[in-house]
Image (cartoon, rainbow, N blue to C red):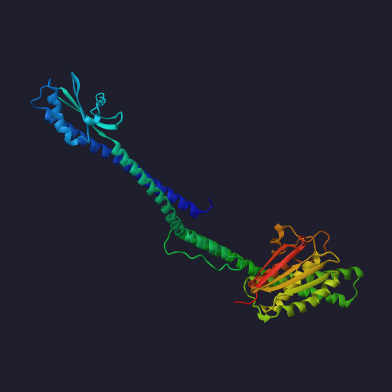
Amino acid sequence: MKSISTRLAVWYATAATTTLAGLFVVGYLLLQHNLIHGIDILNRSEAEVIKLHLMHDYDPHDATLIERRIRKASERTASLFYINVRDQQSGAIFYSGNLKGQPIANGGGQKIFNTEVSDIGKLRVVENVSGPFTITVGTPLRGVDLALEEYIKVCLALLAGMLLISIIVGMLLSRLALRPVRMISETANRIRSDNLSERIPVNAVRDEISDLAHMLNQTFDRLESSFNQIRRFSAEASHELKTPLSLIRLYSEKMLLGGGLSPANEEAVLLQLDEVARLNQIIEEMLFLSRAEAHAITLDLKQVSPVGFLNSFAQDARVLAESQGRLFAHSHTGAGMACFDEKRMRQVFLNLLTNALGASPLGGGVTLRSQLDDGIWRICVEDEGRGLPVDQHERIFERFVRLNPPGSEDKGNGLGLAICRSIVGLHHGRIFASSGTNKSGLQITIEIPASML
């Protein structure tokens, strides 16, 4: 059982049922003892009554007189007791009628004992010596056995009911007891790099759960501080790098315009300008990601027709694909408007198109499918490349991750998909990768709400 709630309920039910079973066992022993003790008292009382009738004016040789006296003393209780009187010399001189001539076995020196008589069953027996006579009085244990059997049946029914009720109560109590843990889990699950300010509510009562919540909140405080320092460093470092890079670009351009460079030096300066431009692009993208994570970017959200937006984008996409020897096709289904920032979404589409064109072979194509349905605008961009292993589908959205095939001429910096994820996240949507429809290539899917709440 993996659920702590279930385990707690089972433990509670087991403990409660076992405790009740133990009490029932003790009750069984006490009931048995009290019932048998009551029978012993009755047997001794009956023996005393018979003894009183034999104590005076008896002739030990007059068996008829003795039997008449005993029978007179026992006739009122003949249905309750089995009586046997023995003379120490002549043996048995009296059997109660219900014994049918069968003697009650001697106790072997015991005054109170259990025995069994044929056709009668188990008896609880008391022996009382009066002069030359041994008075044996027995009472059937059948009533005691029946009472104990009924007790066991009632106990089993109560144990079954206790088990069921304790499981239900245990589940309720465990859910109630683990409610703070679930709240901690839900809150901790919501806290991500873009939501580090949220904290776990801490109860006023100081216990182990509140101490755990307090400790986790302190951990989140340290994480938020570390993330903020990293973001500030990225933003400040990127900003500070722009000035020296601009100077390097200006001096390089000045050297080219001034002339006098050898062909080799001129080629080196041109290469330097390319690298400066690439570094500038990385800095701009890092600044964008830092601002997006700090929620410093404001979207210009408008109700836009996806059809018109896609037709405008498709014109540029088709030209870009043809210039690289690839094909581009798009389609759209569903009618209505979607709420999004055209500039930012165009940036997302261009990043996805650039990656897809780079992955597709010469003569291959990139397909963009758009669908507006059930309040969701879904866009799929699929290439005809080699695709990626499933375990890499999530990793490609991390910063500076580049999974280009060998021999690829892609000079990207690995920030494009990270930017796409940030922009889609600002639209309260999601972006994910999957294998292509024909089990080849890679498909990137974007889902954003058609209307912003």
